[in-house]
Image 1: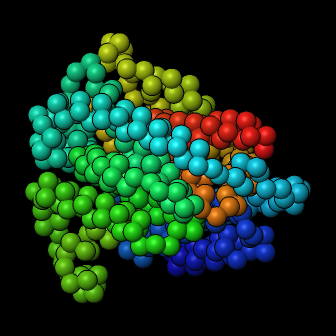
Image 2: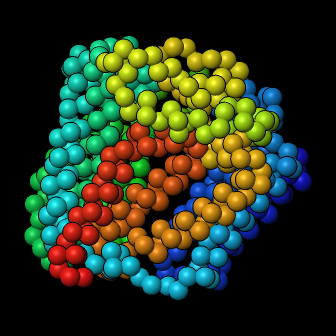
Image 3: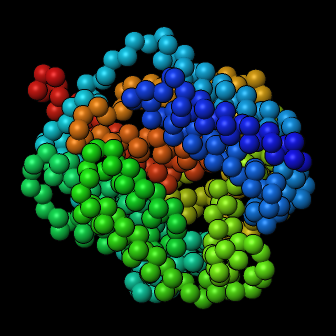
Length: 455
């Protein structure tokens, strides 16, 4: 076991060396760094902690009891896929002359004005879904009280229009869009109205608190912080707004879900070394919860190694994708769980109860392995490295104050990182449809602006 531990430590050093301090690293290589960071977290840091802490560090108990922490073949496969990704990125750098794209170099006031309009439309669209959810829950306050069961989809929300809840995601996207437009104008000396940003931020915090979803609040706030910092914004005001939004969400979640937290954490013993350093039981379990959430990707890959190629069909999630966007309850169609149901049953050792959420995705490594085999996986990750470098060339901003461009760049990269974590296209396209729509709108708008100006 300790030899395997040393193997993951050595792999972490390789990932750090190639992804962060490699000679190939240069301005405009953000994709290499982001993917390497995610790879190191999912497939180096977590396996190391799992070996040291044992089963308490994962919520995939069935997989752990059946397959343990994997074997040397697990380590070799992960290593080969990362090296293939890095080589694909390097080949693109070596064979393509560096040329900054016009899109990445330019930004304008007109771009910010268009983005504000998009933000208003997105937030208004999201309010439709949020209003429907509040009516179903019995009121705005009641919806906060039910946040924990809303997250687990166990509240029994009914109605043919329940698909409208999916519109909630547009609120966070609208908030990010307005944030980018507001601070782009500010950094370029243009006065901008701060009131809509506060209003959109309030709606965004409420929506995230109503689902008790950590990703719902953390992802947009992290993207906004990265966007402002990368664009050169150094005033404290913008970061304080984002920090305040996070604190407000945390407070609403704790108040509305105190019974849930007490039930979850009060029964744990407090006799570990972690409790000694932190001094309370909550800290230990929050720490372990973070590890467990991050570690699902690795445990899913361990499980998928024992699945034969084609056992779950070939790219079935792509053929089932159209059904994911259909209001099946409204149309009277029984969609079922499809391939995700089969994968989840394999991961858990039992089927999920009807109507409950909690599907277990295979992760991109596991998904590619069972669809294409090991050699197909190596080719796929080589091509992925080439594609990430292409994204860096086309979308990595090169101008100061271009917060809109930075937002689009980080949205694209975040979609990629989520795809690595999930591995199933519907788990990316459906909840992040508003992100994809925003990316497309901004690219089309910019093309129109720059074409009209003859750039």
